[in-house]
Image 1 (cartoon, rainbow, N blue to C red):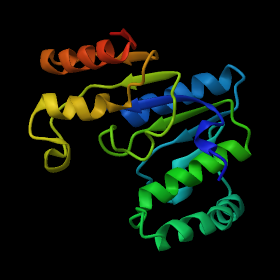
Image 2 (tube, helix red, strand yellow):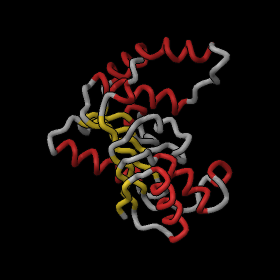
Image 3 (cartoon, rainbow, N blue to C red):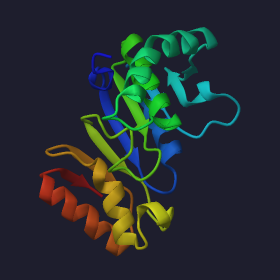
Length: 190
């Protein structure tokens, strides 16, 4: 696919509360500042196309179909290769979003994490900025049974020497985010 996930500068948003709203606001600020901006969020309310937007506009049905046709051979090859497991619905849509933003020559892509962060399909990028919204107990069967474990999973989007903006957090969550930033040499703004 030509590494479409690396074609645009990335703002990566994780957290429990407000990540979709924050991602949408960041995308809007970038768009009105003159940057071509892709936005990838979930879930959708009426149509899958709501998840993938460019400059605030849903991609057209025709563009969605053309992108799916373009990337389908890659998915089929992976699904038939014993080294790979079956791709999830979210992974397919994430790859579709990356392909769309590359095709649309986006300057920025704003990505909302689907679940957690560390193992999320969106976590293949090299973001300019990581944003972490308030974290609380959620998805404990998958992310862990404590705030610290969940915070560690969500802090998994933090990359070395990048900027991290965190909302006000509970003390134990803030400590995990600070520790991960320190370990990775990331610049934290709280």
